Length: 83
Image 1 (cartoon, helix red, strand yellow):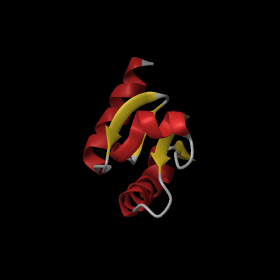
Image 2 (cartoon, rainbow, N blue to C red; image 1 turned 135 degrees about the vertical axis):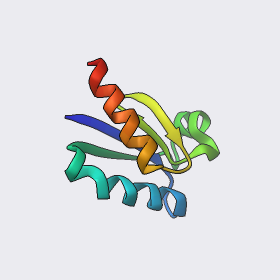
Image 3 (cartoon, one colour; image 1 turned 90 degrees about the vertical axis):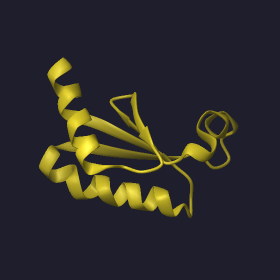
């Protein structure tokens, strides 16, 4: 099962929207979501800054700001074929 990591900030509407999109697809596509808040973590804030939410598929950068369901589904399928 793949792990989808989403780097977020608290009270971030784009982060909340991205998480909802992922949660809606989670059961169908069989993946796990790990949400990591970057607030107060100097290294993560420096790395991800204003690009949140940032999504990774098994540690590989997928996208930032928004989660497009079609693009995410395609990227997840490509990732699975490569394994």
